[in-house]
Image (cartoon, rainbow, N blue to C red; front, side, top):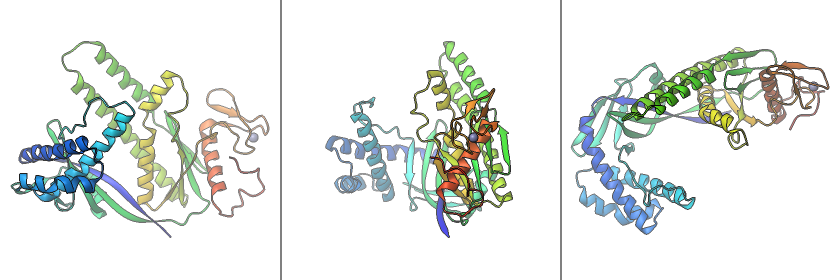
Length: 376
Ligand SMILES: [Zn+2]
């Protein structure tokens, strides 16, 4: 039996923001004095930074709950470290690290949350503030999860509470029944040797439409185009993510229906580093393939399903039966010169992922025996 902890961040819009405004400015002051000290003395260690500045700041802000000074110190270390990294690579825009003051890190002393009444309580300089949380069906699943740390985030006029939830799940015993998922710009193909399903996502059409919309906007000079661009970006992201969530649910259902134990995903780590034409590269960068994988990953694990990543190399260009290089045969079709097999390239990718998975695990299976050697 394998146990795994699934971590998810829930975002709640908060509706009583005015009482929080002074907290944001105090927190910014505290964090900036940590950050300035860290920068002037080159301190990256949380312990050292805390020992140098904690009591001084505690005395300067006597009404601020002390755990804010803790979390500000933690954040200052993180901000300074990433600034130093950027600076070493010569990519830092400013000459010193800066904090814009739109995030507050909260630990379990500084906030509590009640999901049955959808309320949160946050410690401030003037006692605790009760907040009403905006919620939807998406938030229901967090009711049975454990609460971790949180962030209070200010974005424009809106305030959000982002809470990390976790749940330990028991994963199914791994067997040779698995569902492989191949992701493309226009479709998501998934299935097993018995049944392959192809979902048309039209993602590329959506992306291109929004890309053109943005370009039209930017070509006309106007006073402030940023809010409109942001609005379109948000819409585009939400439309694509809705498609991903729906697809992920269908994939999990297929796993249950086939009584499979595992979902196989491509390890796409290096896809952006490969040399590609400028146009294709831009398209792939906009295309948030990792997002779909993240959604499938957590939905599967919450359902007790194992998720395995296999190398993507050759999955759509080699024959799943004999392992030789396939030649394209018309639109998205591939043909094997050795065994004569002819199939859609997305289905070939799914079959290859299944082969690679079966070669990895030690499950005796009649379907793998007596066939060509496992592929690399
Ligand atoms: Zn072949």
